Length: 67
Image (cartoon, rainbow, N blue to C red; front, side):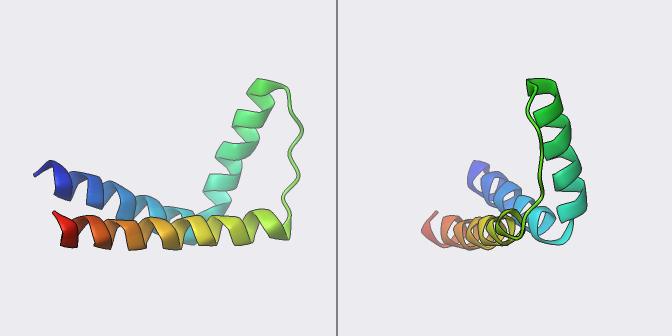
């Protein structure tokens, strides 16, 4: 049961990072503001978020198959 929960978190987290990058960016800016750091959205940040999302989805699938 815990395996499916972890897999669901990984999967939906990956989907959110890929398809809701604007909201993820807003959270990043808020976090940086609270830490006193400046934020600059770059192409590298966008690409890295897509990579993180894809890796997260792949890990979710692996977790389900290896349970």
